[in-house]
Length: 450
Image (spheres, helix red, strand yellow):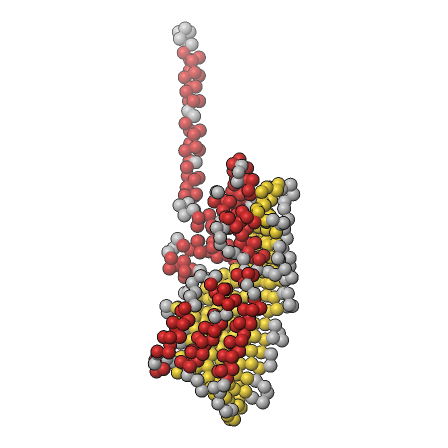
């Protein structure tokens, strides 16, 4: 099978898998996301070389204009690519009685159909549907909730008697404190033992067995190693709960060793929950969730190899079915940071499956047996792809230089110089000069006159 067919089927399987993650009774889901690029790219371009300047600018311009829209319900899925708000390309699939149908702006003259058996054979056993679809989700939830509830109860049982006083934690005043008398080793043992209990459940074990890269035996090995470890080698754990007369509460956890620490603070005041996390001066995270305002705000930083990355995020729900979101990462570069972000919306808009007028319904199984039809379809897809690339190049001329570094402004400017010989062509036409002897001919006829 040609590479074009492989790509088409792979995209179809991905979109059908998106449908498979939604239960029959669920509402449609549409996610529209655009990329934002802010800041001066000259610093990065300078580091990569002078010739990289136009390339960085061209990529940034394209990313800023790009928007992707994913839409799915239990039977239909659609992907739209937009540039500056205008449709550039689309793909859509729809479930049929024994397979799937697919339409796209890349092959508008054809509505492609594929049987389920064909898709399964092409994927060679790769499972693309939701892994939870084949298991008893309620049984798994019950297997997890029971042991976790017991874990929380065991930790709470280590709490001492409440103390009355005055404490300021996270910038808020509290009047009651309850400390927990538990070591790091004891806490880790309780957590690993709980994980072991959950993994022994038949339903959970079945789910875990389908996950590559995870060996349940590693939990037992970690627990055995922990029991043999000296408590003095582990960080010192301190944990406490605080409260006040207004009903505000706060939980503080601190792990410290050798002047390095990990701290976690979870505070609740009314319908506002705040989470603050700091990990050894490498990661900071501040999260605020306001249930009444239906908002979530995130701010943080991450240090990597001497570079501090900062990130922000926000979610604002307008209703149960509609929300706006944004996420941004900023990197120091030169005098000003460069920010890359994703902004978009989530809604309950249903996906649209619509074939172009006059499109022929063609089964992939039949096309694979008809070389002429397969070639015609491949040519149609290639023409659609070339048309898309041409449209992009027309809107973003800088990409042409990036994709064809051998061609640049200089060679193009030399083209007029090559026309100089063509302009000299009239000078070569000295034929009129040769007519001079012809004009002298009458003079030659004067000889008889002598």
